[in-house]
Image (cartoon, rainbow, N blue to C red; front, side, top):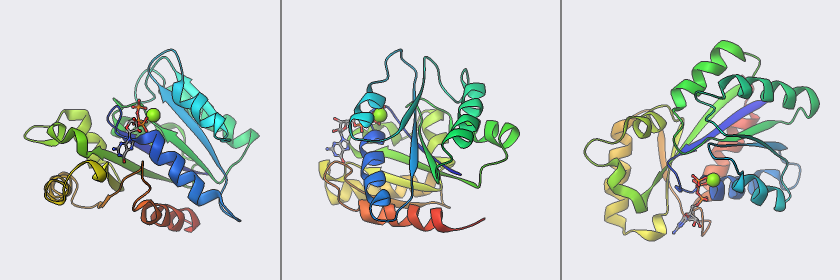
Amino acid sequence: MKLIIISGFLGSGKTTLLLGLVRRLTSGNGCDFVILENEVGEIGIDGVFLEKQGLQVKELYSGCVCCQLAGDLVVTLREIKDVLDPDGVILEASGLAKVESILDTLDRYYGELEGTMVISLADLERFELYQEEPMPFVINQIRYADLVVLNKTDSGDGELTATMAAKLAELNPDAEVIGVSALEGSNLDLVAERLGTWMRTTS
Ligand SMILES: Nc1nc2c(ncn2[C@@H]2O[C@H](COP(=O)(O)OP(=O)(O)OP(=O)(O)O)[C@@H](O)[C@H]2O)c(=O)[nH]1
Ligand SMILES: [Mg+2]
């Protein structure tokens, strides 16, 4: 069982991206996924939405899996492995999650995963978040990403997209940056291809 972590600031398009990727990767003889939603609030809005789309969803709410719910994350992953044993779990982290802390928890307490991939979203509509001095957890999300997805390219021009992609590459020189519109589906095939290739790779 592999784990894909989708991180990104509040409203950056995590749920929209997740749905687009799962649809592309589960068709035909594709992979099967369980979605794990983490929301800091009391009500799991995204979980209800994704269940209505026919996906299998587990929820962790009232806290963040990078801190208060770190233990619950490990327990829940064990349960998913024991009961459902999917090819992959896709964790939609809360918008404020510090990715480094999630990876640290998994390293220490859940070594059984076959692999972990972090996809972090940046939001072109909120480009000011990434200018000058981005907030530490925003930097952390980008820095610990294996793949950076610059979302909402439909909402800005090519120059802004290029400037922001350059800024993201500066924050994480090792990760590929892919511009997409999760809403319109543009370039999602490329992200799905990267994820699909990684899913098929045995470690
Ligand atoms: N213009 C545009 N809007 C988008 C795109 N992707 C998502 N959105 C919109 O952005 C808003 C937030 O999208 P979500 O997918 O719910 O974002 P999220 O990161 O899951 O949000 P939280 O879970 O609340 O942090 C919604 O109104 C989406 O329709 C995109 O590519 N372009
Ligand atoms: Mg969401």
